[in-house]
Amino acid sequence: MKLIEKIADLREEIKRFKREGKIIGFVPTMGYFHEGHLSLMDIARKRSDVLVVSIFVNPIQFGPNEDYNRYPRDLKRDLKLAEERGVDIVFHPDNREMYQENFQTYVNVEKLTKGMCGKYRPGHFRGVTTVVAKLFNIVQPDIAVFGQKDVQQAIVIKRMVGDLNFPVEIVVGPVIREHDGLAMSSRNTYLNDEERKQAPMIYKALKVAREKVKMGNRDAAKLKEIIESTIATAPLARIEYVEIVDDENLEPVSEVKPGTLAAVAVWFGKTRLIDNIYLMER
Image (cartoon, rainbow, N blue to C red; front, side, top):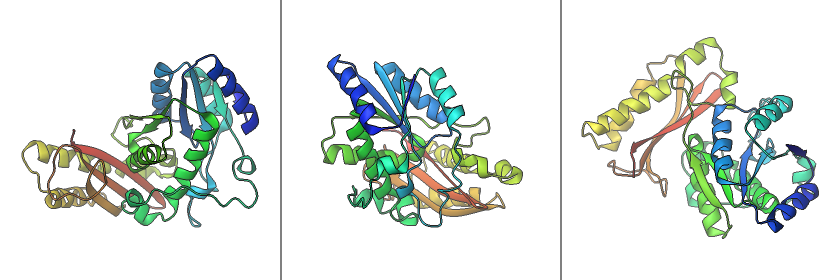
């Protein structure tokens, strides 16, 4: 496994692989790996000849009062885990390498970024789509794998790829959960003991709603109330949003149908957690 920090060096490696006709798989990350990240690497590894993983805590997707400076980082540990998973190249640029002085070009997906996390984190998705577009230009992957936990991000990236004609297949891997159902996230490390104890109520609430759908309840407003009231039984939970949306346009629906997602953002203390579940698969 190679660790590469410079764009020019990575491009030379990619050119060589392309000349050899290799399929390039790519998993973009902000590091501090958990099983969720590693599961995406497994998916990409099976579908590619060369697997590239990026580790870059992207400053332009964080708001001024968000956790950029305290976002967990452990490069040594990440490199060990990546090598164990069969990664060929870890791309680990610094901010100056990714954003030259006076950087002023951004990629913005419009409608899909207005609701859900986009409503509460203005500018976040512009930062995400810009860095992913840059990474796609640098890595030139054939396949890129994203996680279902960040479902809005995955849908936004799919739209960007389609709209801008990137020759990249986007694959979405399932949510990977802790033994008690909490969606794995690097930010889970911020939770104190009592917050961590209560946080699985998020997934419990989503499962309750899905069971109601299986029993015939299709009313999105009622299901939203069920999710909110279930999460509220965790005393430390502060709901930011609960949305029931279509998985193509992320528009709220009044009635559950195939392709309907329930998505939530919940604060426990200073930690913001997101999760989602299909209420009805396509």
